[in-house]
Length: 173
Image (cartoon, rainbow, N blue to C red; front, top):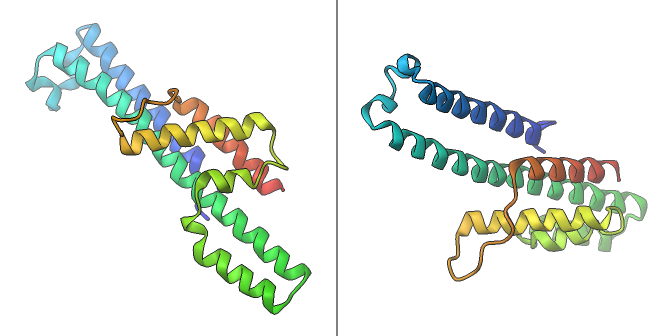
């Protein structure tokens, strides 16, 4: 498993990054460019800097969701492996051991949607739906298939809230 609060670490880093971008934009708007001396911002027109900062914000949003999903997926796999080990402990047999070995060997190739579905008996329907919505958006961000329409946009705030709650509930099960 990753650090105890890896998604929280990503979230806090995102918040600091967004704050830095906002402070920079405020400094530009107020004409306080002395704080920007020695940066690449001084070599390009102010309007281009504003556009670059806005584009960076969108990229930071998307990359934050990618990072949170990567942590979520690894944590989900770890929880499923722990649950598989519990089954072996309650009814040890050669078959259960073979099943556990098969699960551990292939779980990283399982579809995320199918793993999420395993939690349907434990999670509220809305939590499952939002988690899958984040997965669809993550896939779109990662692959940008222009032949497919973009799914509903997911904010880093929503991704953090949903994925942190899903992990909390998984670990309590």
